[in-house]
Image 1 (cartoon, protein in one colour):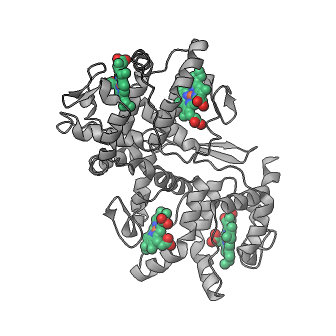
Image 2 (cartoon, helix red, strand yellow; image 1 turned 135 degrees about the vertical axis):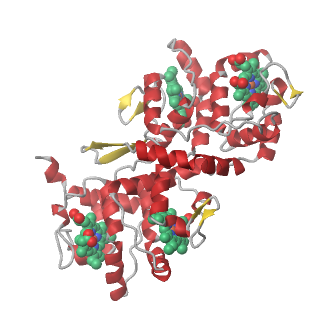
Image 3 (cartoon, helix red, strand yellow; image 1 turned 60 degrees about the vertical axis):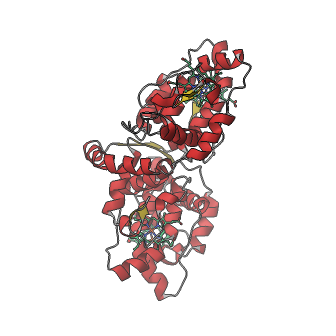
Length: 408
Ligand code: HEC
Ligand code: HEC
Ligand code: HEC
Ligand code: HEC
């Protein structure tokens, strides 16, 4: 818990600076699938938007900020972009109500801001994993780590002592060290007739919390790991030969699973656990194909995992037909006409130049929420809530109105 806070406090000025210096975002547009792939350079950049737009007035992140709304650092938002967008959308009426009371201005968003903010909320899960050191202590025994490794002078002498790992704040350091030594550790395990340890959800974080607390020397010096750079992770993924076995968005081999198709809802450290667990299967395939075991240095593992994590930010395609129905059910048609080709109040959406991405749709819907809300309260209608899937369908429908444009 405290380590997470320390990281935020100590680094926030650096995040801010790097955000100003290098606010580069990759938005790849693939018209055929109508999908956006988004890989930020620093997922924490959206923190600035969170503050600028006044979200922090009502919401704290891990105890820092207002308390009108819930602390968003405690929440688990695994969802894709549109799932997160639907949560934000559904809370607009209570947010607008509170804002009037507090006399706050309505925060409009540019597309970049909307994407950065959502990516930040998506990434909070990573920061929100303090780990449980008591569970970690039990795990270190149960998994027989201490048969071979010592901590604070107690334990085995076959592997290196854990103490020097204590200064690393991020559990991904432990994951990376473990990964790099995987093959030689496995040899020893076999010799000693021990089984290769596997990790369930959360266990790497717990072990890491234990090592941080119990390891000698860790408190004097703390080493922070970068939060993970998904853009760089894409490069590392390629350089380390992951494409030799995995595909992502149609590129690569199919020996391992397609990592862009997984819908795991796993956190960063859980993905690290998954990689380790599959390490044995990976290693034997790699031996057969004589591929060298890929080692990671510096922040490379954090980056590649952040990359895999962000593959799940992308939404699967929705149904345009379902979206057409929703457009009427949710009252959009009242202003925009049943086929979205223009009504008495709202413009013809097939003429819109802004609907070529889901990011745009959400940004526009958000910005015109106050107009909608007024109209809805005049007519005493209910606020149209959306699930993530409904947002996908709505987008598929609005996008289908645009299709004639990509032809020319
Ligand atoms: C004026 C106060 C206020 C502001 C400003 C505000 N919110 Fe909220 N927010 C709330 C309240 C109250 C709730 C809980 C009620 C609800 O979900 O409708 C909430 C709920 C949420 C939730 C859902 C949390 C959950 O676990 O269900 C999210 C996500 C969220 N807000 C994001 C944001 C973001 C992002 C911003 C900035 C653009 C923002 N909020 C600005 C008051 C506010
Ligand atoms: C059978 C003995 C054995 C067991 C059991 C074992 N390890 Fe290891 N471990 C080793 C050996 C040997 C190495 C060093 C390998 C090398 O030098 O490449 C190592 C290396 C490591 C490293 C890298 C250390 C560094 O300083 O870079 C980590 C991290 C690690 N082990 C974690 C664990 C954890 C966590 C467990 C329990 C889940 C565990 N080990 C269980 C033998 C073992
Ligand atoms: C030699 C082939 C091979 C290479 C190279 C390889 N993998 Fe794998 N990977 C596999 C196989 C096979 C599985 C599935 C194993 C299983 O199901 O037990 C897998 C599983 C995974 C999983 C778990 C997926 C899931 O759905 O559970 C992740 C994450 C992963 N690999 C990441 C990587 C990364 C990152 C790299 C590059 C550093 C990489 N892999 C390189 C073969 C490989
Ligand atoms: C109260 C009437 C009203 C309702 C209800 C309404 N809109 Fe709008 N919409 C407007 C008006 C007016 C504009 C143009 C001015 C603006 O953006 O605020 C607009 C603009 C838009 C645009 C932007 C078009 C462009 O190119 O800029 C989109 C997209 C959109 N609406 C989608 C929706 C969706 C989806 C719904 C249902 C959830 C909806 N609207 C409900 C009145 C409405």
